[in-house]
Image 1: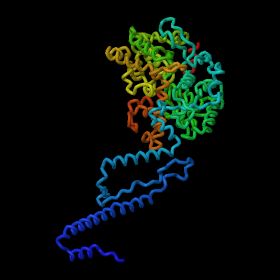
Image 2 (image 1 turned 30 degrees about the vertical axis):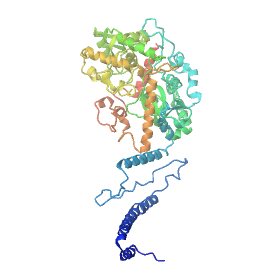
Image 3 (image 1 turned 90 degrees about the vertical axis):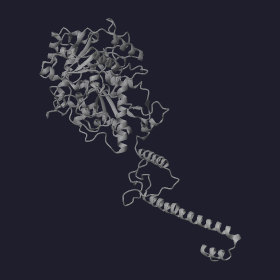
Length: 601
């Protein structure tokens, strides 16, 4: 049967029309009108919108990467951007239904972005590690450390042969008490009654590894680790073979270690860029440039695999990116917070009769050294105190004598040693003495994890040339600092003490963060930034130049590129590889060992 059109129906009704049917006609017309508009809106929003959605689906390939070796990992490498219709003027012309509010669009977009980011992360093998931080009920979220179970030849076996660790020092006594050395007696009342040990300045390998055993967020599951620790005693290893051994012997353990690590599944996750290790020596002991037998040290830090790892050393290179400075160990290793607080209060109350002091020996063989001039100024000043550390001067190697002098001084002079840095800088700050540095490489560019970037808040800087060329009076320069400013500087130094010391490795501080805690968190932050940058497909810095490594640590938050710096003259690197500190890096390392020998004479 043929369906009649709406028009014919209307005509027929009109022919039959009468007064009593007028109301029915109006109702019918209203119904037809409503039907027409409903049909029009349905066609626009359902039929047309459905076509657009179908077209979008045709353009959007499956998000699962069929080439992925890991089931379930999602990739967005081939997904197109969301299709947007544009008018000739460039503005969007998509019609938004009246029931769709701006807030709902924002919320939908947020959810879609979150979903996209989540799926984007899933294709990386370190996803689980990054997501542990999302678990707010887990205090270790984002802080887990996985420790490699190295064969004993890389660590403990060295301690069993402790007499071979130094030609001039019996390191056996210094490896006792978890690396702190024998306890110090408080005969002269210089120390606290507990927590003080005769710690060797090169014992960080053992101290750090033993502190790691007490770390509260260790894990056996490397997939959730924020970083991976390699307990290799790199400093002790090279110490055994620096003198009288060929390059093959010096490199053997480093090559063995790298080979062992690269076979581990944990290495493949980031090719070692989430790995870190500690060496209680200066970086130059691990940076042999050639295979000449006369060249110094081993080549651990120049091995391709080692360049991916982070190595924590007591002195880092300003021109390389794979090592980071951590404090030398001091004599103080507190077992609880109260030990630290009591010591800090004591340092605040001390009467300090000397304006400045210096503990050290001249360097007559180094024409660029200012130590001779500093010693002369100390001898001539009635406000300065000198503790000479040359042959036969036993007091300079007495922890009690050194700490007593530092505790009696307002300022402690810290010129370069055989290399940029000195343990003395940390001993003096532990005593509440304001350090005076003469080269930025002695602290400011070294210990950026542990010291404030604004060095004027805790120290005084007198450029070496002021002493070397202009014969500036140290006494006059320091006397110009007001008593109020001295008090502020000293208080800032005393407040830094917890982060500059290594707590007793057999215990754990309750609320304070020691040098170990600060270093581990810095490594975790470094690895986390790297992982996030990998996900986002970006680098941390623009136009990175490794030779300018010292500058990047000084950048403020958000800065991505370095330029000229006031300290450039201090770190100019001549073509022969020598720095302004005098002599080559290898010679500096050799001199450091010679003076260690002198210390035992």
